Amino acid sequence: MHTAREKFGSRMAVIAALAGSAIGLGNIWRFPYLVGENGGAAFIVIYIVFTLLLSLPIFLAESVLGRSSGANCRVAVSSLVKGRWGHLPGLLMVFTPLWIVSYYSVVGGWSLEYLVQAVRLDFIHTAPADVTGSFGTFISKPFAPLFFHLAFLAVTLGVVALGVKSGIEKFSKWSIPTLFVIIVLIAVYSLTLPGSAKGVEYLLKPDFSKVTVHTFISALGQSFYSLSLGMGIVITYSSYVSKEENLMVAGMGSSVSDLLFAILAGFAILPAVFAAGIEPGSGPTLIFDTLPFIFSSIGQNTPVISAVVSILFFLAILIAALTSSISLVEVGVAYLTETKGFSRVGACVLLFVGCGLFGGLCSLSFGPLADVHIAGLGLFDFADSFASNILLVLGGLIVVILVGWVLPGQELFKELTNNGTLGANVKLYPVVRFLIRYVAPVGILILVLSSIL
Image (cartoon, rainbow, N blue to C red):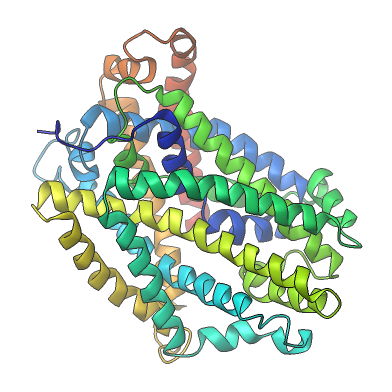
């Protein structure tokens, strides 16, 4: 049944695609302000520990589920769940990424608009005082954010429509190295700014006196969110991985790439924030409000350098947003093509309509629909909260239970060790299985309780 399915062409392609699903706005948009809000380097240390001990085992569990089934997410998950309602967990794993990409593409649209502004040199020709607050003005408009949301979604689905090897693999293989080059260049520039040394100290010198329970919860949530866990992405992408590939190596490569990029993003953003004398914990508006202010301030004296850096920065944000949105959409496309008989192009058109409409409502929640609330939240914030606090943790819990307790142990051993042929993996297998069965569920339950209490 699955012999005709496309496969990734090489280990580099596998790591690039999986890393691309992990590296996204969560690294550039979310990670720096969380570091800023939670004491700097202390947060980074906790974040790394959680990624290696909790998130990586869940990542490997999803990888095993995907490759062992060789099928789309719905089939992979539901094959281990018996009974009348056995198909529902699989459908949940398909629904989750489509829910997320609907509002995620709104933020992707913001990045596209800000890249256009950078190319037009708007930040250079605008006084710093006028830049402050311009983000709020932009997102409250009805038409421009909606247009860029749909444009971003169209680019995403255009890549996915090309297929696994011709679309996703090719895009990942050039976009991920490009992202790393750009973020390193920005970090080097950021470190040359007067006053940036305070930002470096903030990133390298842990202050555990500022660590609270909230810090641990934020680090765990960010690690879970950043690696695209509980979304069906890793399951779907791993179903395209050949049986000869080393899943542990691919998982470690993807996790380390994600960690490294997040830390580089911190060095690209926070030294510049300190150099400008701005509060590092300024929240989600950090890259769309604070950074343009910095570019405008620098541009008064060095316009050419500021123009180049601002273009590179928002290009990096756009590429990072696309690598994640592509992986989110592929889950739904794989389901529609393999289970419902859609062509790849037809599935992309259907998802463009559905996600475009729901995302459009989320976009308008900052303007004409600002008075519409669900559970006390605007539509965009509700969509994000529902995904982060319910859909993702539920999806992650389903995976670790199925792989840790339902999937036969010999199948888990076979997938993680390539049938016992990988000596190093054989030695690590008992540790990984213990983490999947006992440690990962505890971590997920902590996230559940933190969202309730």
